[in-house]
Amino acid sequence: MSEKENPVVEPDELVDEVVERLMDRADASGTALLGEGGLLTEVTRAVLERALEAEMTGHLGYEKHDPAGRGSGNSRNGTSPKTVLTDAGAVTVAVPRDRNGAFDPKILPKGARRLAGFNERILSLYARGMSVRDIRSHLAAIYSVEVSPDLISTVTDAVVDELAVWQNRPLDAVWPIIYIDALWVKIRSGSVVSRPVYVAVGVDMDGCKDVLGLWVGAEGEGATTWMAVLSELRNRGVEDVCIVACDGLKGLPDAVTATWPKATVQTCVIHLVRASLRFASKRDHPRLVPALKAIYTAPTEQAAGQALDAFAASDLGKRYPAIVKTWQAAWSEFTPYLAFPPEIRKVVYSTNMVESINARLRKTTRNRGHFPSEQAALKVLYLAVRELIEPKARDVNHVAAHWKSALNAFALFFEDRISAQ
Image (tube, rainbow, N blue to C red):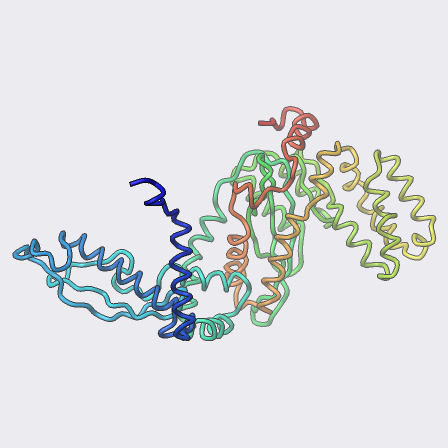
């Protein structure tokens, strides 16, 4: 028979054809998509029962109704109904039994009441900052499933061990850039107080970003705690960092250089710009931004100093002297940026990918209001990080479009401390 008479059907085409038939049948009968009797519910039930029957056949060694099973010492013994929670909602499945009671299916193990995908759905909702009450309401509204608070706590508590392993994993020896910052969360400890969560985000030799760790501190961000955080990173294998980008917290540069003596401490340019704009009326922002850009895009430190002097002497500088003071106070940590070649400047300044992590974490914590404990806060933040980042996944986490040219610039600028692969 020719290929024309017997065409090859691609898997995707077959799936599309099956889905089309199911949707046509649902439209014709008015069947709902979810809920008892819904299209996805019935398909999920059929797939699970077919898989369970296949497992039973493998367990017994012969097909259903096959005469070969006579006298084999074990046989099918009907089914038992079992309701499981799936991504399509609650599904009641007919689980086959054998007379010896030895059948232990893998797709739906004994005692299991949830498929793995359902647990991931709960974790995904939790990672978005939804409370236990919000998750219960969401599952009830979307899947018509009543889930107990204890179940949600059990599922989310399962990541605690995973969090501990992640927090203590070994790290690469050399990092071109590490960004350090703190975000604030409300945690109940007798009363609800705001506490800093210290975040370190590294850019590795492949130009991929990775959250290196999360640490909850006491009230008030301090350089002493940062010293402990940086020491932990060093103990986990980070021997050298070319550039550590941070805000202007007093004592933080000393903590960085005490940990990695050769590191260049760079005040984050975006932090400086944002701090400046906080002092100014929004109607002046369109004029302020170009004036500040003239400072941080200057070709040399001398040219940047002249641009700052020009701004200080302008009407904007006189109206907002606090902005001038902000740049003057950060000058010694800002000026290393001016010595970098354009390829490194672009990577250091363009922290949008890193900022997107912080923005997502802040959104997650805002959704929750406050957390009952430090561990609860870390669970939510870790799950958010887990959804955002897959280490070494270049398509998801790549920071710079032209990273190889930046890496070569790092290798030249920082000499023998880094090598371009």
